[in-house]
Length: 523
Ligand code: GLN
Image (cartoon, rainbow, N blue to C red):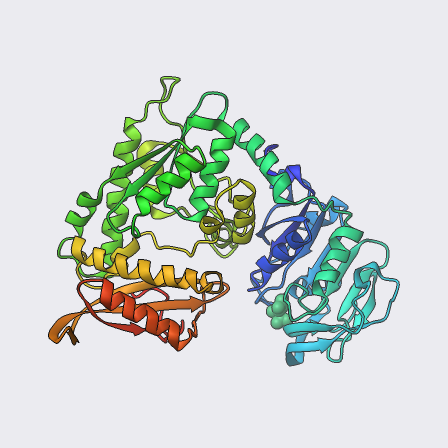
Protein backbone atom coordinates (compact mmCIF):
# COMPACT_ATOMS: atom_id res chain seq x y z
CA UNK A 1 0.00 0.00 0.00
CA UNK A 2 2.90 2.34 0.72
CA UNK A 3 3.46 3.14 -2.94
CA UNK A 4 0.04 4.81 -3.24
CA UNK A 5 0.00 8.41 -4.42
CA UNK A 6 -2.19 9.22 -1.41
CA UNK A 7 0.70 8.18 0.83
CA UNK A 8 3.13 10.44 -0.98
CA UNK A 9 1.14 13.67 -0.94
CA UNK A 10 -1.01 15.22 1.76
CA UNK A 11 -4.41 14.01 0.61
CA UNK A 12 -7.91 15.30 1.22
CA UNK A 13 -10.40 12.45 1.17
CA UNK A 14 -13.64 13.30 -0.63
CA UNK A 15 -16.40 10.88 0.27
CA UNK A 16 -18.94 10.75 -2.51
CA UNK A 17 -22.62 10.58 -1.66
CA UNK A 18 -23.56 10.59 -5.33
CA UNK A 19 -23.87 14.28 -6.20
CA UNK A 20 -23.37 15.20 -9.83
CA UNK A 21 -20.79 17.72 -8.62
CA UNK A 22 -18.69 15.45 -6.37
CA UNK A 23 -15.76 15.08 -8.75
CA UNK A 24 -15.54 18.87 -9.01
CA UNK A 25 -14.55 19.05 -5.34
CA UNK A 26 -11.48 16.97 -6.14
CA UNK A 27 -10.79 19.09 -9.23
CA UNK A 28 -10.95 22.40 -7.37
CA UNK A 29 -8.59 21.24 -4.64
CA UNK A 30 -6.07 20.06 -7.18
CA UNK A 31 -6.33 23.41 -8.97
CA UNK A 32 -4.58 25.00 -6.01
CA UNK A 33 -2.15 22.08 -5.81
CA UNK A 34 -3.67 20.12 -2.97
CA UNK A 35 -4.00 16.44 -3.82
CA UNK A 36 -7.46 14.97 -3.29
CA UNK A 37 -9.00 11.61 -3.92
CA UNK A 38 -12.62 10.66 -4.10
CA UNK A 39 -13.99 7.41 -2.75
CA UNK A 40 -17.53 6.13 -2.27
CA UNK A 41 -19.27 7.31 0.91
CA UNK A 42 -19.42 3.71 2.08
CA UNK A 43 -15.62 3.54 2.33
CA UNK A 44 -14.52 1.90 5.60
CA UNK A 45 -11.86 4.07 7.16
CA UNK A 46 -10.05 1.05 8.60
CA UNK A 47 -9.60 -0.28 5.06
CA UNK A 48 -8.22 2.96 3.65
CA UNK A 49 -4.49 2.22 3.89
CA UNK A 50 -3.53 5.90 4.16
CA UNK A 51 -4.35 8.76 6.50
CA UNK A 52 -6.22 11.70 4.99
CA UNK A 53 -5.24 15.25 5.88
CA UNK A 54 -8.89 16.21 5.91
CA UNK A 55 -12.26 14.77 4.91
CA UNK A 56 -15.01 16.30 2.76
CA UNK A 57 -18.48 14.80 2.61
CA UNK A 58 -20.08 15.57 -0.75
CA UNK A 59 -23.68 16.35 -1.69
CA UNK A 60 -26.03 13.61 -2.77
CA UNK A 61 -29.49 12.91 -4.15
CA UNK A 62 -30.79 11.10 -1.06
CA UNK A 63 -32.45 12.44 2.07
CA UNK A 64 -30.54 11.56 5.23
CA UNK A 65 -33.76 10.60 7.04
CA UNK A 66 -34.87 8.17 4.30
CA UNK A 67 -34.65 4.46 4.87
CA UNK A 68 -31.66 3.14 2.97
CA UNK A 69 -29.97 6.55 2.74
CA UNK A 70 -26.17 6.23 2.74
CA UNK A 71 -24.30 7.12 5.93
CA UNK A 72 -20.67 7.78 6.59
CA UNK A 73 -18.37 5.50 8.59
CA UNK A 74 -18.28 7.18 12.02
CA UNK A 75 -14.59 6.34 12.21
CA UNK A 76 -13.95 9.58 10.26
CA UNK A 77 -14.31 11.36 13.60
CA UNK A 78 -11.54 9.24 15.13
CA UNK A 79 -9.06 10.38 12.47
CA UNK A 80 -8.76 13.68 14.32
CA UNK A 81 -8.61 15.65 11.09
CA UNK A 82 -10.84 18.51 9.91
CA UNK A 83 -14.14 17.57 8.29
CA UNK A 84 -16.31 19.59 5.90
CA UNK A 85 -19.83 18.52 4.97
CA UNK A 86 -21.32 19.95 1.77
CA UNK A 87 -25.12 19.95 1.34
CA UNK A 88 -25.98 16.27 1.96
CA UNK A 89 -22.70 16.19 3.86
CA UNK A 90 -23.92 19.01 6.12
CA UNK A 91 -27.23 17.23 6.58
CA UNK A 92 -25.36 14.02 7.43
CA UNK A 93 -23.40 15.83 10.16
CA UNK A 94 -26.65 17.26 11.55
CA UNK A 95 -28.35 13.86 11.35
CA UNK A 96 -25.57 12.15 13.28
CA UNK A 97 -25.76 14.65 16.14
CA UNK A 98 -29.46 15.20 16.72
CA UNK A 99 -31.45 14.25 13.63
CA UNK A 100 -32.58 17.84 12.96
CA UNK A 101 -33.11 17.38 9.24
CA UNK A 102 -36.36 17.35 7.30
CA UNK A 103 -38.07 18.45 4.14
CA UNK A 104 -37.87 22.24 3.55
CA UNK A 105 -41.02 24.23 2.71
CA UNK A 106 -39.57 24.96 -0.67
CA UNK A 107 -36.76 23.56 -2.72
CA UNK A 108 -33.86 25.91 -3.21
CA UNK A 109 -32.04 25.70 -6.48
CA UNK A 110 -29.83 28.47 -7.81
CA UNK A 111 -27.90 31.45 -6.49
CA UNK A 112 -28.18 32.89 -3.01
CA UNK A 113 -26.09 35.37 -1.04
CA UNK A 114 -23.90 34.28 1.82
CA UNK A 115 -24.11 36.20 5.05
CA UNK A 116 -21.24 35.39 7.40
CA UNK A 117 -22.04 35.84 11.10
CA UNK A 118 -18.80 34.68 12.67
CA UNK A 119 -16.31 36.93 10.86
CA UNK A 120 -13.41 35.20 12.63
CA UNK A 121 -14.29 31.77 11.33
CA UNK A 122 -11.35 30.54 9.22
CA UNK A 123 -13.57 28.66 6.76
CA UNK A 124 -15.35 31.85 5.71
CA UNK A 125 -12.32 34.10 5.37
CA UNK A 126 -12.81 36.40 2.33
CA UNK A 127 -16.12 34.90 1.22
CA UNK A 128 -18.69 37.09 3.01
CA UNK A 129 -21.53 38.43 0.78
CA UNK A 130 -20.47 36.26 -2.12
CA UNK A 131 -22.90 34.36 -4.33
CA UNK A 132 -23.31 30.73 -3.39
CA UNK A 133 -25.03 28.00 -5.38
CA UNK A 134 -27.86 26.08 -3.71
CA UNK A 135 -29.32 22.76 -4.77
CA UNK A 136 -31.41 21.17 -2.05
CA UNK A 137 -34.90 20.26 -0.92
CA UNK A 138 -34.10 19.22 2.66
CA UNK A 139 -32.81 21.51 5.33
CA UNK A 140 -31.67 21.67 8.92
CA UNK A 141 -34.48 22.39 11.39
CA UNK A 142 -32.08 22.99 14.24
CA UNK A 143 -28.42 22.88 15.19
CA UNK A 144 -26.79 19.57 15.92
CA UNK A 145 -25.40 19.14 19.43
CA UNK A 146 -22.30 21.30 20.14
CA UNK A 147 -22.49 23.24 16.86
CA UNK A 148 -22.97 26.98 16.24
CA UNK A 149 -24.27 28.86 13.22
CA UNK A 150 -21.51 30.72 11.43
CA UNK A 151 -23.28 31.78 8.21
CA UNK A 152 -26.81 32.22 6.93
CA UNK A 153 -28.57 32.89 3.64
CA UNK A 154 -32.10 34.09 2.90
CA UNK A 155 -33.61 30.65 2.81
CA UNK A 156 -31.09 28.76 4.92
CA UNK A 157 -30.73 29.88 8.53
CA UNK A 158 -28.11 27.10 8.91
CA UNK A 159 -26.20 27.86 5.75
CA UNK A 160 -22.86 27.38 7.52
CA UNK A 161 -22.32 25.63 10.84
CA UNK A 162 -19.24 24.76 12.87
CA UNK A 163 -18.53 22.52 15.83
CA UNK A 164 -17.77 24.46 18.99
CA UNK A 165 -14.47 22.75 19.73
CA UNK A 166 -13.57 20.50 16.79
CA UNK A 167 -12.59 21.52 13.23
CA UNK A 168 -15.84 20.15 11.82
CA UNK A 169 -17.90 22.32 9.45
CA UNK A 170 -21.01 22.03 7.34
CA UNK A 171 -22.28 24.22 4.51
CA UNK A 172 -25.60 24.06 2.68
CA UNK A 173 -24.30 25.36 -0.67
CA UNK A 174 -21.93 23.92 -3.26
CA UNK A 175 -18.53 25.67 -3.21
CA UNK A 176 -17.22 23.35 -5.95
CA UNK A 177 -19.36 24.79 -8.76
CA UNK A 178 -18.16 27.96 -10.44
CA UNK A 179 -21.54 29.64 -9.83
CA UNK A 180 -20.38 29.93 -6.21
CA UNK A 181 -18.15 32.91 -6.95
CA UNK A 182 -15.83 32.44 -3.96
CA UNK A 183 -16.23 28.69 -3.62
CA UNK A 184 -12.64 27.96 -4.44
CA UNK A 185 -11.47 30.39 -1.75
CA UNK A 186 -13.63 28.56 0.76
CA UNK A 187 -12.24 25.17 -0.26
CA UNK A 188 -8.76 26.60 -0.03
CA UNK A 189 -9.51 27.99 3.43
CA UNK A 190 -10.51 24.49 4.42
CA UNK A 191 -7.72 22.49 2.80
CA UNK A 192 -4.79 24.86 3.24
CA UNK A 193 -5.59 26.96 6.32
CA UNK A 194 -7.62 24.50 8.36
CA UNK A 195 -6.26 21.08 7.28
CA UNK A 196 -2.77 22.52 6.67
CA UNK A 197 -2.42 20.40 3.52
CA UNK A 198 0.78 21.07 1.61
CA UNK A 199 0.24 22.64 -1.79
CA UNK A 200 2.73 20.38 -3.52
CA UNK A 201 0.52 18.56 -6.00
CA UNK A 202 2.25 19.60 -9.19
CA UNK A 203 2.99 17.54 -12.26
CA UNK A 204 6.70 18.22 -11.63
CA UNK A 205 6.43 16.42 -8.30
CA UNK A 206 4.09 13.79 -9.69
CA UNK A 207 6.53 12.76 -12.43
CA UNK A 208 9.23 11.93 -9.92
CA UNK A 209 7.03 10.04 -7.49
CA UNK A 210 5.25 8.22 -10.31
CA UNK A 211 8.48 7.07 -11.91
CA UNK A 212 9.67 5.75 -8.52
CA UNK A 213 6.33 4.06 -8.03
CA UNK A 214 6.43 2.33 -11.42
CA UNK A 215 10.01 1.12 -10.79
CA UNK A 216 9.00 -0.36 -7.46
CA UNK A 217 5.89 -1.98 -8.87
CA UNK A 218 7.57 -3.53 -11.89
CA UNK A 219 10.74 -4.51 -10.08
CA UNK A 220 14.25 -4.77 -11.54
CA UNK A 221 13.65 -7.27 -14.37
CA UNK A 222 9.98 -7.65 -15.31
CA UNK A 223 8.75 -6.32 -18.66
CA UNK A 224 5.62 -4.44 -19.68
CA UNK A 225 3.62 -4.19 -22.89
CA UNK A 226 1.06 -1.63 -23.92
CA UNK A 227 -0.92 -0.54 -26.95
CA UNK A 228 -0.47 2.96 -28.30
CA UNK A 229 -2.97 4.74 -30.49
CA UNK A 230 -1.35 8.05 -31.30
CA UNK A 231 -3.61 9.76 -28.78
CA UNK A 232 -2.44 11.77 -25.81
CA UNK A 233 -3.23 9.27 -23.03
CA UNK A 234 -1.38 6.28 -24.45
CA UNK A 235 1.55 8.46 -25.52
CA UNK A 236 1.94 10.06 -22.09
CA UNK A 237 1.59 6.69 -20.35
CA UNK A 238 4.20 5.19 -22.69
CA UNK A 239 6.67 8.01 -22.20
CA UNK A 240 6.32 7.66 -18.45
CA UNK A 241 7.05 3.93 -18.74
CA UNK A 242 10.04 4.65 -20.94
CA UNK A 243 11.38 7.07 -18.33
CA UNK A 244 10.82 4.53 -15.57
CA UNK A 245 12.01 1.26 -17.11
CA UNK A 246 13.50 2.12 -20.50
CA UNK A 247 13.31 -0.63 -23.11
CA UNK A 248 11.67 -3.06 -20.74
CA UNK A 249 8.52 -1.32 -21.89
CA UNK A 250 7.27 -2.47 -25.30
CA UNK A 251 4.72 -0.34 -27.11
CA UNK A 252 2.66 -1.85 -29.89
CA UNK A 253 0.75 0.14 -32.49
CA UNK A 254 -1.76 -1.95 -34.37
CA UNK A 255 -2.53 -0.43 -37.75
CA UNK A 256 -6.13 -1.54 -38.13
CA UNK A 257 -6.60 0.02 -41.54
CA UNK A 258 -8.98 2.65 -40.21
CA UNK A 259 -6.47 5.08 -38.69
CA UNK A 260 -6.12 8.67 -39.88
CA UNK A 261 -4.09 9.57 -42.98
CA UNK A 262 -0.38 8.62 -42.53
CA UNK A 263 -1.06 7.95 -38.86
CA UNK A 264 1.09 4.84 -38.39
CA UNK A 265 4.12 6.59 -39.91
CA UNK A 266 3.55 9.73 -37.88
CA UNK A 267 3.18 7.84 -34.62
CA UNK A 268 6.37 5.95 -35.36
CA UNK A 269 8.24 9.17 -36.04
CA UNK A 270 7.05 10.82 -32.85
CA UNK A 271 7.36 7.88 -30.50
CA UNK A 272 10.53 6.25 -31.76
CA UNK A 273 12.56 9.11 -33.21
CA UNK A 274 11.20 11.81 -30.92
CA UNK A 275 10.56 10.11 -27.60
CA UNK A 276 12.82 7.07 -27.80
CA UNK A 277 10.04 4.61 -27.05
CA UNK A 278 10.55 0.96 -27.92
CA UNK A 279 7.72 0.60 -30.47
CA UNK A 280 6.57 -2.11 -32.84
CA UNK A 281 4.14 -1.13 -35.59
CA UNK A 282 2.03 -3.98 -36.88
CA UNK A 283 0.27 -3.55 -40.18
CA UNK A 284 -2.86 -5.64 -39.73
CA UNK A 285 -5.02 -3.53 -42.03
CA UNK A 286 -5.86 -6.39 -44.41
CA UNK A 287 -6.97 -8.56 -41.53
CA UNK A 288 -9.29 -5.87 -40.13
CA UNK A 289 -10.69 -4.82 -43.49
CA UNK A 290 -11.33 -8.44 -44.48
CA UNK A 291 -13.35 -8.98 -41.34
CA UNK A 292 -15.28 -5.75 -41.94
CA UNK A 293 -16.32 -6.81 -45.44
CA UNK A 294 -20.08 -6.54 -45.95
CA UNK A 295 -20.69 -5.28 -42.39
CA UNK A 296 -22.84 -2.14 -42.10
CA UNK A 297 -24.14 -2.30 -38.52
CA UNK A 298 -22.14 0.14 -36.32
CA UNK A 299 -22.23 -2.09 -33.25
CA UNK A 300 -20.97 -5.03 -35.29
CA UNK A 301 -18.16 -2.89 -36.67
CA UNK A 302 -17.12 -1.97 -33.14
CA UNK A 303 -17.19 -5.58 -31.96
CA UNK A 304 -15.20 -6.84 -34.92
CA UNK A 305 -12.56 -4.17 -34.45
CA UNK A 306 -12.35 -4.80 -30.69
CA UNK A 307 -12.04 -8.57 -31.07
CA UNK A 308 -9.60 -8.45 -33.96
CA UNK A 309 -7.52 -6.03 -31.94
CA UNK A 310 -7.23 -8.49 -29.05
CA UNK A 311 -6.27 -11.23 -31.45
CA UNK A 312 -3.57 -9.21 -33.24
CA UNK A 313 -2.21 -7.71 -30.04
CA UNK A 314 -1.88 -11.12 -28.37
CA UNK A 315 -0.13 -12.53 -31.40
CA UNK A 316 2.36 -9.66 -31.48
CA UNK A 317 2.88 -9.71 -27.74
CA UNK A 318 3.76 -13.40 -27.92
CA UNK A 319 6.65 -12.52 -30.21
CA UNK A 320 8.25 -10.33 -27.56
CA UNK A 321 10.70 -12.31 -25.45
CA UNK A 322 11.75 -10.60 -22.23
CA UNK A 323 15.45 -10.64 -21.44
CA UNK A 324 14.97 -12.42 -18.14
CA UNK A 325 13.60 -15.43 -20.04
CA UNK A 326 10.23 -15.14 -18.34
CA UNK A 327 6.87 -14.02 -19.74
CA UNK A 328 5.73 -10.41 -20.04
CA UNK A 329 4.23 -9.60 -16.68
CA UNK A 330 2.35 -6.31 -17.00
CA UNK A 331 -0.04 -4.57 -19.35
CA UNK A 332 -0.04 -0.79 -19.47
CA UNK A 333 -3.37 0.98 -19.68
CA UNK A 334 -4.00 4.72 -19.94
CA UNK A 335 -6.99 4.78 -17.58
CA UNK A 336 -7.79 8.30 -16.38
CA UNK A 337 -9.34 9.43 -13.10
CA UNK A 338 -12.84 10.10 -14.48
CA UNK A 339 -13.07 6.41 -15.49
CA UNK A 340 -11.93 5.40 -12.03
CA UNK A 341 -14.50 7.69 -10.40
CA UNK A 342 -17.25 6.33 -12.60
CA UNK A 343 -16.38 2.76 -11.78
CA UNK A 344 -16.13 3.17 -8.00
CA UNK A 345 -19.46 4.92 -7.58
CA UNK A 346 -20.94 3.46 -4.40
CA UNK A 347 -24.10 2.60 -6.29
CA UNK A 348 -22.18 0.04 -8.31
CA UNK A 349 -21.93 -3.59 -7.24
CA UNK A 350 -18.30 -3.42 -6.15
CA UNK A 351 -15.12 -1.44 -6.47
CA UNK A 352 -13.86 -3.25 -9.52
CA UNK A 353 -12.29 -0.91 -12.00
CA UNK A 354 -13.91 -0.81 -15.38
CA UNK A 355 -11.46 -2.01 -17.98
CA UNK A 356 -11.79 -1.23 -21.63
CA UNK A 357 -13.27 -4.36 -23.17
CA UNK A 358 -10.11 -4.89 -25.23
CA UNK A 359 -7.97 -4.82 -22.14
CA UNK A 360 -10.36 -6.96 -20.10
CA UNK A 361 -9.95 -9.75 -22.65
CA UNK A 362 -6.19 -9.39 -22.72
CA UNK A 363 -5.85 -9.59 -18.97
CA UNK A 364 -7.77 -12.83 -18.85
CA UNK A 365 -6.11 -14.49 -21.84
CA UNK A 366 -2.56 -13.46 -21.12
CA UNK A 367 -2.57 -13.50 -17.31
CA UNK A 368 -1.18 -10.00 -17.17
CA UNK A 369 -1.17 -7.58 -14.28
CA UNK A 370 -2.52 -4.13 -15.03
CA UNK A 371 -0.41 -1.01 -14.64
CA UNK A 372 -2.20 2.35 -14.85
CA UNK A 373 0.12 5.31 -14.26
CA UNK A 374 -2.52 7.92 -15.15
CA UNK A 375 -5.33 6.61 -13.01
CA UNK A 376 -5.05 9.48 -10.53
CA UNK A 377 -5.14 12.20 -13.21
CA UNK A 378 -7.74 14.34 -14.89
CA UNK A 379 -7.38 14.98 -18.62
CA UNK A 380 -5.87 18.45 -18.27
CA UNK A 381 -3.34 17.06 -15.78
CA UNK A 382 -2.38 14.40 -18.32
CA UNK A 383 -1.84 17.14 -20.92
CA UNK A 384 0.29 19.13 -18.53
CA UNK A 385 2.29 16.00 -17.74
CA UNK A 386 2.69 15.35 -21.47
CA UNK A 387 4.17 18.78 -22.05
CA UNK A 388 6.50 18.27 -19.13
CA UNK A 389 7.68 14.97 -20.60
CA UNK A 390 8.52 16.70 -23.87
CA UNK A 391 5.69 15.30 -25.94
CA UNK A 392 5.01 17.58 -28.94
CA UNK A 393 2.41 20.26 -28.30
CA UNK A 394 0.18 19.22 -31.23
CA UNK A 395 -0.05 15.67 -29.94
CA UNK A 396 -0.73 16.76 -26.37
CA UNK A 397 -3.66 18.90 -27.53
CA UNK A 398 -4.97 16.48 -30.11
CA UNK A 399 -8.71 15.94 -30.46
CA UNK A 400 -10.01 12.59 -29.25
CA UNK A 401 -10.27 9.81 -31.83
CA UNK A 402 -12.55 6.78 -31.41
CA UNK A 403 -11.10 3.27 -31.06
CA UNK A 404 -12.98 1.94 -34.12
CA UNK A 405 -11.56 4.94 -35.97
CA UNK A 406 -12.66 5.80 -39.45
CA UNK A 407 -14.75 2.60 -39.61
CA UNK A 408 -17.52 4.46 -37.79
CA UNK A 409 -16.97 7.57 -39.93
CA UNK A 410 -17.54 5.65 -43.12
CA UNK A 411 -21.25 4.98 -42.92
CA UNK A 412 -22.34 1.67 -44.33
CA UNK A 413 -19.78 -0.82 -45.58
CA UNK A 414 -16.11 -0.14 -44.83
CA UNK A 415 -13.78 -0.80 -47.74
CA UNK A 416 -10.24 0.34 -48.38
CA UNK A 417 -11.51 2.76 -51.05
CA UNK A 418 -14.15 4.26 -48.78
CA UNK A 419 -11.65 4.65 -45.94
CA UNK A 420 -9.29 6.40 -48.35
CA UNK A 421 -11.96 8.96 -49.31
CA UNK A 422 -12.95 9.68 -45.70
CA UNK A 423 -9.31 9.92 -44.68
CA UNK A 424 -8.32 12.40 -47.39
CA UNK A 425 -11.35 14.59 -46.77
CA UNK A 426 -10.66 14.53 -43.04
CA UNK A 427 -7.05 15.46 -43.58
CA UNK A 428 -7.94 18.49 -45.69
CA UNK A 429 -10.54 19.58 -43.16
CA UNK A 430 -8.21 19.28 -40.15
CA UNK A 431 -5.35 20.97 -42.03
CA UNK A 432 -7.59 23.94 -42.82
CA UNK A 433 -8.82 24.09 -39.22
CA UNK A 434 -5.23 24.23 -38.00
CA UNK A 435 -4.31 26.85 -40.59
CA UNK A 436 -7.22 29.02 -39.49
CA UNK A 437 -5.96 28.78 -35.89
CA UNK A 438 -9.19 27.12 -34.77
CA UNK A 439 -7.97 23.67 -33.74
CA UNK A 440 -7.76 24.43 -30.04
CA UNK A 441 -11.09 26.25 -30.00
CA UNK A 442 -12.82 23.12 -31.24
CA UNK A 443 -13.18 20.03 -29.04
CA UNK A 444 -13.47 17.53 -31.86
CA UNK A 445 -13.70 17.73 -35.64
CA UNK A 446 -13.81 15.12 -38.39
CA UNK A 447 -15.22 14.26 -41.78
CA UNK A 448 -17.73 11.44 -42.26
CA UNK A 449 -18.42 9.76 -45.56
CA UNK A 450 -22.09 9.20 -46.39
CA UNK A 451 -22.64 6.40 -48.88
CA UNK A 452 -25.37 8.21 -50.80
CA UNK A 453 -24.83 9.37 -54.34
CA UNK A 454 -25.52 12.88 -55.40
CA UNK A 455 -25.37 14.57 -58.78
CA UNK A 456 -22.76 17.21 -59.51
CA UNK A 457 -21.11 18.86 -62.48
CA UNK A 458 -17.35 19.16 -62.98
CA UNK A 459 -15.68 20.28 -66.18
CA UNK A 460 -19.00 20.13 -68.06
CA UNK A 461 -19.27 16.51 -67.02
CA UNK A 462 -22.12 15.21 -64.95
CA UNK A 463 -20.76 13.55 -61.82
CA UNK A 464 -22.61 11.18 -59.54
CA UNK A 465 -20.60 10.69 -56.37
CA UNK A 466 -20.83 10.49 -52.58
CA UNK A 467 -21.29 13.07 -49.83
CA UNK A 468 -18.90 14.22 -47.11
CA UNK A 469 -20.40 15.53 -43.88
CA UNK A 470 -18.16 17.76 -41.77
CA UNK A 471 -18.60 17.81 -38.02
CA UNK A 472 -17.04 20.14 -35.45
CA UNK A 473 -18.20 20.47 -31.87
CA UNK A 474 -17.46 22.48 -28.78
CA UNK A 475 -17.90 20.86 -25.39
CA UNK A 476 -16.34 20.75 -21.96
CA UNK A 477 -17.28 17.21 -21.00
CA UNK A 478 -18.53 15.48 -24.18
CA UNK A 479 -21.82 14.78 -22.40
CA UNK A 480 -23.44 17.69 -24.20
CA UNK A 481 -21.99 19.46 -27.20
CA UNK A 482 -22.79 22.20 -29.66
CA UNK A 483 -21.68 22.54 -33.26
CA UNK A 484 -18.98 25.04 -34.01
CA UNK A 485 -20.05 28.24 -35.84
CA UNK A 486 -17.47 28.45 -38.64
CA UNK A 487 -17.24 31.54 -40.85
CA UNK A 488 -18.85 31.03 -44.26
CA UNK A 489 -15.55 31.62 -46.03
CA UNK A 490 -13.91 28.84 -44.07
CA UNK A 491 -16.60 26.33 -44.99
CA UNK A 492 -16.50 27.47 -48.59
CA UNK A 493 -12.75 26.90 -48.74
CA UNK A 494 -12.90 23.43 -47.19
CA UNK A 495 -15.80 22.30 -49.40
CA UNK A 496 -14.03 23.48 -52.53
CA UNK A 497 -10.79 21.75 -51.61
CA UNK A 498 -12.49 18.46 -50.75
CA UNK A 499 -14.54 18.27 -53.95
CA UNK A 500 -11.56 19.26 -56.05
CA UNK A 501 -8.95 17.08 -54.39
CA UNK A 502 -10.78 13.96 -53.27
CA UNK A 503 -11.99 11.64 -55.99
CA UNK A 504 -15.38 10.17 -55.26
CA UNK A 505 -16.91 13.20 -53.53
CA UNK A 506 -19.48 15.41 -55.24
CA UNK A 507 -20.88 17.33 -52.34
CA UNK A 508 -19.93 18.59 -48.85
CA UNK A 509 -22.38 19.36 -46.04
CA UNK A 510 -21.90 20.75 -42.53
CA UNK A 511 -23.57 19.02 -39.58
CA UNK A 512 -25.51 21.53 -37.47
CA UNK A 513 -26.95 19.20 -34.84
CA UNK A 514 -26.07 19.51 -31.19
CA UNK A 515 -25.68 16.65 -28.70
CA UNK A 516 -28.32 15.79 -27.63
CA UNK A 517 -30.30 14.97 -29.74
CA UNK A 518 -27.44 13.82 -31.99
CA UNK A 519 -24.21 12.20 -30.81
CA UNK A 520 -20.73 13.44 -31.65
CA UNK A 521 -19.92 10.55 -33.99
CA UNK A 522 -22.25 9.56 -36.82
CA UNK A 523 -22.30 5.87 -35.89
N1 GLN B 1 -30.84 15.42 -1.26
C1 GLN B 1 -30.52 16.44 -0.32
C2 GLN B 1 -31.49 17.61 -0.45
O1 GLN B 1 -32.34 17.62 -1.29
C3 GLN B 1 -29.10 16.94 -0.54
C4 GLN B 1 -28.95 17.64 -1.84
C5 GLN B 1 -27.49 17.87 -2.21
O2 GLN B 1 -26.58 17.38 -1.58
N2 GLN B 1 -27.28 18.58 -3.29
O3 GLN B 1 -31.43 18.53 0.32
